[in-house]
Amino acid sequence: MSTTDPKLMDKIISLAKQRGFVFPGSEIYGGLANTWDYGPLGAQLRMNIKKLWWQDVVERRPDMVGLDGAILMNPKVWEASGHVTTFHDPLVEDVVTHKRYRADHLLEKALDTTMAGKSLEDMAKLIVDNNILSPDGNELTPPKQFNLMFSTKIGPVSDSGTDVYMRPETAQAIFVNFRNVLQSSRQRLPFGIAQIGKAFRNEITPGNFIFRTLEFEQMEIEYFVEEGEWETKFEEWQKWMQEWAVKIGIDTEKLHADDIPENDLAHYSKRTIDFDFEFPFGKDELWGLAYRTNYDLSQHQEHSGEKLVYTDPQDPKNKFIPHVIEPSMGVDRTMLAVLVSAYDEETVNDNTRVVMRLPHIIAPYQVAILPLQKKLELQDVAKKLYTILGGKYRTEYDETQSIGKRYRRQDEIGTPYCITIDFESLKDNAVTIRERDSMKQERIAIDDVVNYLEKTLQ
Ligand code: GAP
Image (cartoon, rainbow, N blue to C red; front, side, top):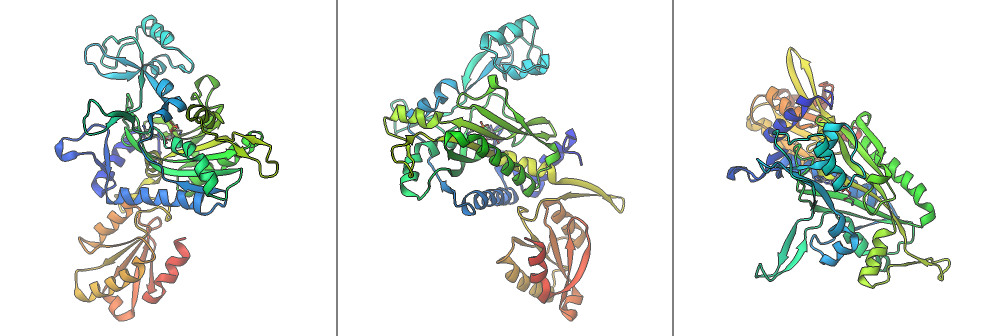
């Protein structure tokens, strides 16, 4: 099914709820708009994506180390990083309904032109000159800047506590710990620090399921380099991101690496590529790759008064603030792009078969063990096999409903292999292995199951 079919989104949202990938947040209390909870399969899928990322960027690279920074940081961090003064979006309000919108988004849609580099005054004039109204047909307030950082208070008394922000990106914990990591690890330039963690943004227009939420998770790398090598390293990371998209099953025909125009770059960046993906609701940013220069470390050095320089081991007189390449990937958007890419429908015996063609490496379950009936002798064999496979693969044991319904469920949740134990198994010590994509069934000896899976589930 095409990833740009608008109906695909509804199908994915419904399957995600029904099968336990994503539930609406706080549902029994009527929900809380734009919050989502990940169910058993969603939690596992996210975990698999994050684990694979961590293995690939930290555990399998000698030039990378990990970090797990705090969500709450000294507010001076956000002054130094520029987020207090510049991390905002232009907000307009419908004067009747009081619904809030991004002025740039409304204008871009109405005038079919970019608002990159436009000031609040420019946008106010365009709204008036072109009689731009809210989606409900009402007048709009003039645009004003709206800071996206959530703030909260530390301390037992709410009106006298210290104001702090919920981090809007994980990156700053890496910059703030640059010296600690350098001193405690054996790293020398070029090297990177990777981190996975929650970030929070008070988005004006959250929506499109888990695409734009208020609370989300990022997998970020700050890769420190000498200034002269930034272009080479930028290209290396771009290639890596493209290859990783293939590895996790993202439809790369729908993935576009677009350079952000200079007048639309974030305050810290000299070059940024957005990896845009063709989602069912339109093409939008999946991941970002930015050259942040040495902006962040310089800012933190200036604001904290602490030296954040690197000393060249070959020439100790050569001290400088390293430059940074930043591959930044949202876990939630990655999961959405993976689901959108994997979802498929086909007609089998006049019925529609829904199948999530997830790569084995990240599928929530890799194997399902299905005794044909709830009979003790079959359950015995099935449970023994579960014990053997459970320690090696993500394995589900399911003995409910008819075998047809169980296959259907496993197809929908993307399980690559189903193993059925039937009455013949008691005689011939063999089982049926069914492959998800081809639906091909093979009879193999129970003793060969591990070998078989070892060859196919890498
Ligand atoms: N440190 C750089 C940074 O935060 P960003 O482009 O603002 O850059 C990086 O965010 C990634 O985080 C995005 O490419 C996207 O995958 C994810 N992301 C950003 N805002 C999000 C939101 N409101 N909901 C879900 N994911 C989001």
